[in-house]
Length: 298
Image 1 (cartoon, one colour):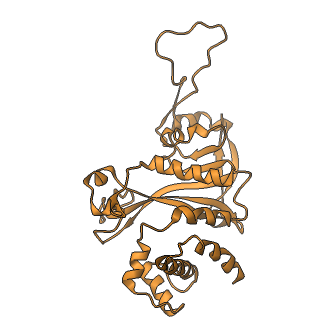
Image 2 (tube, helix red, strand yellow; image 1 turned 90 degrees about the horizontal axis):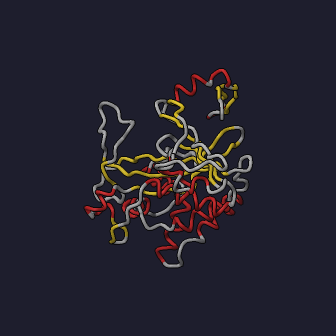
Image 3 (tube, one colour; image 1 turned 180 degrees about the vertical axis):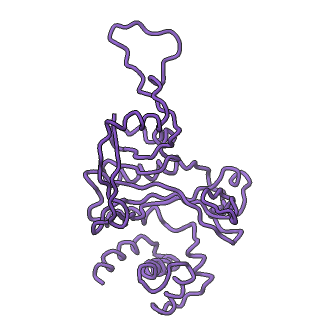
């Protein structure tokens, strides 16, 4: 209980001294406890049931659902306080951060952030464009008791530009239409804030959608080692060598300067050609499992 007090008290201190702020800081802490307690599944209705039966809070369902869907919580003050509570965030001298986006289907037509987002994992009997919220999130990758865990660090609602242009009710915050930001801009903002707080190099682990120059350029292409990007490439993606460095005293070439070097081929072709030089590594996966894989770097 002393651990919970030491963790939750700093979070409560970020809420305002108004009557509404004092209510919210109580609801916020008890909601975290309701999610953490192995009482029932952590869907919103069961969290509310836990607050009623286990903690004895007298909270109307409408007020609780409005609190859970609130777009005005002071996350900008909550996250740095939470980051400061992490005792040892680095792994081999780097802060490993996972980056990905997901959708959260909804039924209410006036919920903030909702739109018809494309679901890449939709099954045959599901809508490819469900009414949902698109959430971009980052999390700290850390080995805890021999297993990899992902601890949430920050998140953003992604809103489509066409919905913002339509000025619908789902893109309004405090009565005003929010400004448009691309996913790459949102991701870069969150990652820069993590680096500014911890002051350690940040290794971004993400999929092929983010693993390109769209994110890399917004991170100033690593900014001298402050950021590193670990991503999986599509097998049919064409790779090029670095552009050749002109020799000293060599006259400049006519025409536009080269952006790339020699064509290396697709990822699959490069992997096949480099297989003889590959080295076997044992990689720790989820749930303590290990897997052998071949890797080659150049």
